[in-house]
Amino acid sequence: MLPDPISLLPDLERLARVAGAAIMEVYATDFAVERKGDDSPVTEADQKAEALILPGLRALTPDIPIVAEEEAAAGRIPRTGDTFWLVDPLDGTKEFIKKNGEFTVNIGLILAGRPVAGVVYAPALGVLWSGADGKAWREDSSGRAAISCRRPPQRGAIVLDSRSHRAP
Image (cartoon, rainbow, N blue to C red):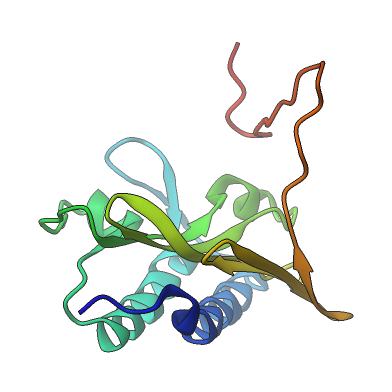
């Protein structure tokens, strides 16, 4: 039986915060940077965060496979159908290394091939975004508030860019 996505949010938020705390412990140190097979960087923080998230998701939904960045980089990619967890325990490792605070913990649930629940936590900023079933929230030190997408403008471009992955 598939879980109700919105009922999972408190556990996902907790997992993201726990992983974020582990990330921030490493962030406060002089940490080593290694390279994965694709030459992208990986740190102890990436590995520690993933090691905290995966058991939590397995306990929460033991029958749903997990596709996680560091596991995948190590060649451990589970067999999945159209339902799985997608985890990037430290999205923005290059920004983490630069110590600019622009990195997140990402956990998402894909059901029937569609994203239906997820959290994005920016531990250095203390901001958590979560959503499921068409509802979304932003939480920071001032509290929790519902958020929504704005309508795109009639004219003009909307651009999303990456500081570390710029391309033409």
